[in-house]
Image (cartoon, rainbow, N blue to C red; front, side, top):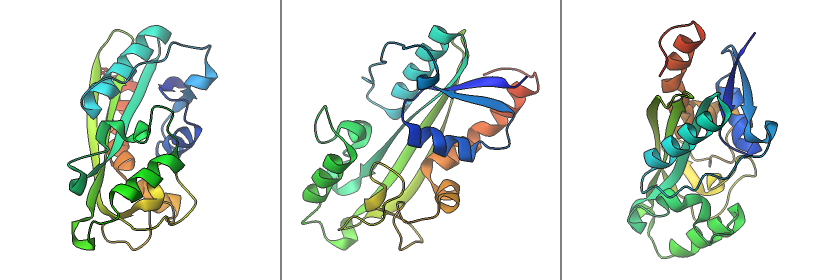
Length: 204
């Protein structure tokens, strides 16, 4: 029987991305939508790590399952690190991708090409029901484009051009994006921990 691994997210696009990157591991991946409703975890941390740990530990304790949570965001140098931990709700509390991207374009409209550097950051927390937790971090450097490009991906993908590419995250083939992305890097770092758990070794 496969070990159940709960992805602490209701974002189906994120679940699909995680499934692609974690393919080959002997886990049954579940998302929050596969379980009875749970209380929302308020992401009130000041860092990506704080939010990821809170989500993973809370959900693991509530469900009794091994839980993986990530907190990711876009850090723009010209905006003093914004939107940062507020990436998902950058435009307003009821934000969506379209409104967030529109606000980012407006905030960056007078920023010259040389100063449009940015990076995606992802912190993944893996928690056991007893509260043990381990974190890893992935970073992808790049820049913010002046127009939306591509229709794949989600979030700020249409505006983010990773270093070494001319295409946005939303234009790249998922296999390429998953190799270089912040989330892809973080998941590669967490894979050995998951493999050890699956082999009956020490937990987090």
